[in-house]
Length: 424
Image (cartoon, rainbow, N blue to C red; front, side, top):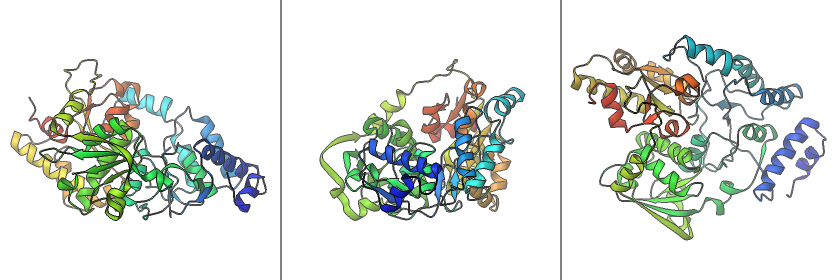
């Protein structure tokens, strides 16, 4: 790898042993993927994926201490993935005991380390850091050092920033050094589509289901999607961005997608069109039957497949302000149709602290609370990692949560029926 004089000096130890180790790690990481140079991180803020104080992460805490004690703090302030605990989320004594004594016993200590390293603020805990209410939205063309898969695919695709699907801690090292290796999605060639996906559905496809189908088909490759603009329009308004948030998270978790292009909608597709399609690209046609096939093939791993759901999680990734408002209307209408006053299944809507603050200033907040729905900043995935929670029959419309936990997937319409008592 060709290094600048400054980076070579850091590698040689002129700024201390710790920063030298950081540089060596990133150089080796880049060399594995064929990077020939390092490029500066240009975004205003960074985002870290590791937010949870797991007892087992001793080596991470030791590494963080070395960075702090040597003065090698992040060159950017950063946001972080959601906190794993919230007392407002339904729990019990045994669940809490495992959470606090065997899982996230070092949460306060770890958040102290994050603060010293450069945490943006005490509320900067969300997987959807690009929300306006959070304040970590990269500019088009920015070079990032992120790891959270749902945020990476959103930044690359919807915002036109550039970031690889990094691992946790590598995201922090890139911010500490201020450089990342140039390969993959940081290059023009790496951003070309090797799949053309043709949407031929008779109605607007479910975001999470469509993303799942594409992710499982193309895996880590880049796709150019035709026909989706028919349903989303050609403007990246709140509704389209909310759709793409959930769609992208499903492509990233059900596959390993870090970037997609949507004809006539996403920035690079609007600028370059089909020139983004690589020679020899494969084609995948998605119609109603294909989406139905994908849905029916999801495994149900509950011990009792006919169990009555005990909990519903919505918001993985975190919900937008637009979603919280629209779901308030949906829940109210659903309850009115069934003659119920409150949801019949404990239901948690999760969103970024900043989004919840904005929501709580609207008249929708009191209305949603009246339905019995709980709002929280928690990470549903971290909650479900508790072995006891994993045994519970939990439902969700998040394909990411379905993929990584025992939660059972239903479409938005099916979830609404279940929580409002309309499902038979």
